[in-house]
Length: 444
Image 1 (tube, rainbow, N blue to C red):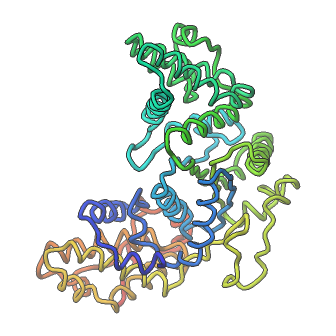
Image 2 (cartoon, helix red, strand yellow):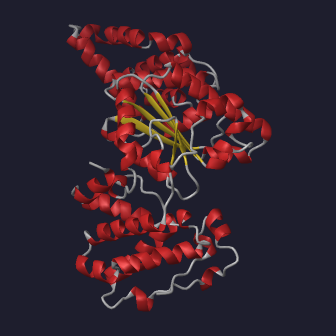
Image 3 (cartoon, rainbow, N blue to C red):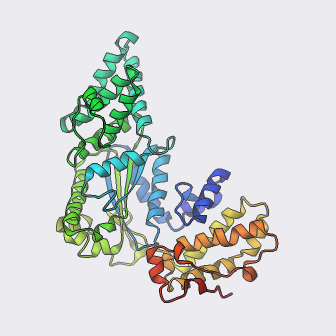
C-alpha cells in the first residue's frame, strides 16, 4: 500500500494527530506521524524498504538525498526514519554546521549521534537504555548457557570480550569503557558509571577519575570515531535492534565554510562512504541531504573528484524514471497540484479531530485550499516548490484554528494573508523581496 493511501486509511490516534498539527502550526517538520502526511513518496517505498531489510540482515547502505530548499528533504528523511523505527532500528538525525557539528571532525559527529540516538521506546538520548539492554542480553545468554549466579559476572565478562573482539582490534577503548561502566554499576557508583557512559558517547572533558577507573585516556578523536561507531553497532545488534539509521542533514552548508575545512569535510564524507561500502559497518543505513548546487557545484562534491565519482547519478532523464535504488535520489519538489493535495490532506486530518468536522471541510473547501496555495506561492515569487512550510503554517494556524474556534469565521471574508519578516526563513525572505511583507493580499 502506498504511503499516500495508507495515510488516509489507517486510524489516527489523538496524540499523533495533535503532535503533527502542533508542529505544522509552528512551521516545523513533525518529529513523528509523517506517514499521515506522505504524498508522492510511494514511488520510493519498495526500493527503500528493500534496503532497510538488507541492512537488518547485516549489510550497510549509503544514500544521498537531493532536493532544492522546500522540496521536503527533512520530511523525507524523517519519514524514512519512521519506517526504520518500525523495523526496530535505532535512529539519529544530525544537523551539520560549521560551528556545532563540523563534518571534518568525526568525533563531534559521533557525539551528536549518541546525543540524538532514539528508538521506538526511548527518546534521545537512548544510549544508556541501549547499553543496559545489551548487558541484560549478555546476562540472559550466560544464564541460558548454564551459568550459575556466582559465575554470572565472570561469564558476562567473557561474553562481552568475545562479542567485542573485532571492535577491540580497532577501538580497544570502547570495550574498556563498557567494562568500566558495568564495574561502576555493580559497585553502586552511579557518578562514575554516568561519567564513563558520557565518555563512551564521545563527550569531552570527562573527569579524570572516571577515565582512570575505566582504564581509558584522553578524549575521543577523529580516527577513533570509526571504531566507536563499530562498537555501537555491535551493541545495538546484540541488544535486539535491527540496525542504526543515521541522517546527516544540511550537508550543503559545507559550501559556506573555509576552503581548508571544506576540503577536510568532503574527504571525511568520502571516507565514510568508502567505509560503509567496504562492509566495516554492518547494520548501518547512512543518509546525507543536500541541494543540487552541493552535488553539482564546484564548491561542493565536484571539488573532490573521488567523492563526485562515488555519488555520480544520471538525472538527465525524465524524473518519472529516476532510479530509487541509485546512490543519489532526487526529490522533485512541490507543484501547485501536489501542494493543494497536501493541504487537503492536512485539512481532513485536522477535521477528524475537530468538534465540527463538516464545518471545517465546508468553510475551508478544496477551492479555498487551492486559492491559499496559489496565494502563498505567489507571495514567494511564484516559487511553489519552496512554499509548503509557510503554506501549512498559515493553513493550520491562521485558517483552520479560527474556523474551529469561531462559529462565524469565514476566511474569505475575515482573513487577509500577510507575511511578516520574522516568520520567514532567509530563502523565503529573499524570494519575497521586492514586495511589502505586510501588504500581501489573498485575492479570492
